[in-house]
Image (cartoon, rainbow, N blue to C red; front, side):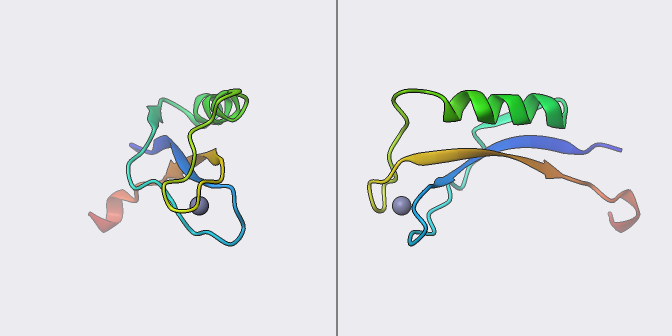
Amino acid sequence: MSNKYKVRAYCSSRICEYVHKEDVMVAINYETAYSLAQLYNDFPSKPSCPSCGEAISFYAHAVIEEPWLT
Ligand SMILES: [Zn+2]
């Protein structure tokens, strides 16, 4: 099993669908990815969305690899 746990960034505005294409961070497990996402979300100066200017939010994202499919 080689699951990947990532932190991704997306726009916090409900009317904007911007999602940062590249992963912000790759973590060793979900707990780490989750706490990193929380940490980024607590930053006082968050990056703003290049599309609409709203604050960017971060979330943990698990990529489950299914070996029987590869
Ligand atoms: Zn936006």
